Length: 270
Ligand SMILES: [Zn+2]
Figure 1 (tube, protein in one colour):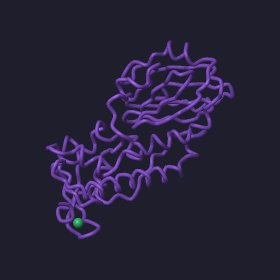
Figure 2 (cartoon, helix red, strand yellow):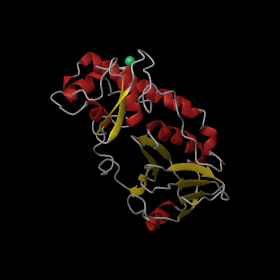
Figure 3 (tube, protein in one colour):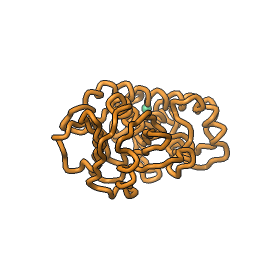
Figure 4 (tube, helix red, strand yellow):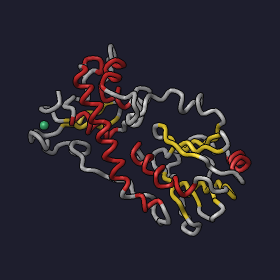
């Protein structure tokens, strides 16, 4: 599933190819994504206009055009790439074509993504309840600590809830909790400030590392026959249940929290 680092890498990969170029057509082959794609509106709004900016909020990409906004989410399996027309694949649902013939092409086999238009980005239902960016200035241990007081949910759910902080997907939650030596089932409200300081730093570190690794895949966004290759990094616990902890050699355990697999070391994580 595309996570925050993949979305950030997508932004960096497509940005220079789509900004300030006149849009000549919008082609919607499949409008049934998570919400219906407003195909007619997209054509009316975008043809003969340009995108003046692109930014990321959580896992949403927001493309600005004349103070209005295209909101894109990659869902479970989506990707965006810069195509040249010929390499059309089965699940390539949307094309935005520019005057230089380059194409911003959206592919989404499972169709859980979204492609929506709005003139009001501040109160949009998909964005208005999002918590702070983990790589932004307001995210730190003190923020998590204060927000978590009296919360009885497992800390893993707490950090994966986008109302609390955006972009901490399952893999990153598993890994950051291991590095912080916090058991994923521990009640969020009982974790002390010092632990939240370590945890916030580990969340930031793993996201930054993933984004840095993504930088090496940027060429895949242009003219490739395949969708961009999402990157795997060295994982300490995720997907390693039953194997040995790399620190203490205990056998890693798996517990399901909120229907998500949570692998932890019973000795290192308290
Ligand atoms: Zn261990």
